[in-house]
Length: 247
Image 1 (cartoon, rainbow, N blue to C red):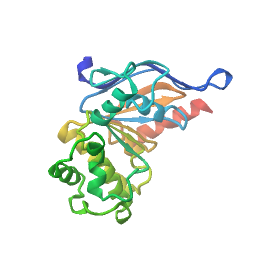
Image 2: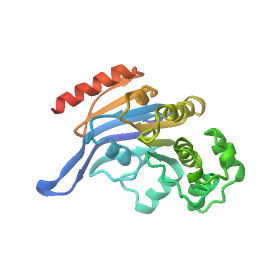
Image 3: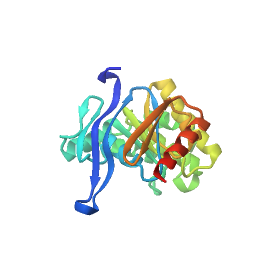
Image 4: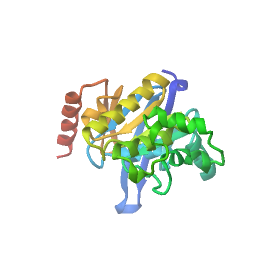
């Protein structure tokens, strides 16, 4: 694939925290591409750099060195203001903690990214985003009136309201029971298949990762291979091998 087919491209990305003897290298010379219209899961042992990879790829954190390109835009040299605008308009985020505002209804939470960018959210667009995640009848409910799975789906609708080029998800099913988790994963899979959305998801769950087109493995800040459309058992075996490397 050429670079134009990449939603996100990381080239020799290194991220260090701290300085001197106390410095920690979370990512070490990582190069990866996430093609448009694909679903990629990122896995690895605890402390392998998964969340740091996601944050650098999404423009939430700046690499110490290397470059990150989102939809043809190089992030490295952008000012904080331009980086904020890019994240707001072209990138979606879903986290394990739903991060919904408790005083707002589902519809108001979904509309928030548009309001923050100074745009009046078209009512039909908010309704459509909630319909997409199966919550058209819950628009007026506040987070405390929704189940965990429903709250995660509101968070998903909020991430999609700006029609982002890429959706990043950090353990999106981590706080959900297995049945509800499967529903959220089916939604993510459907967005890739039906609308060509690009999804990059960090997960520790081999069953969740098996919903993806590709699984990328990290260990100690390095990429340790990837698998195309693997079964959950194959993923679990690969993870066990990575854990063994560290012991």
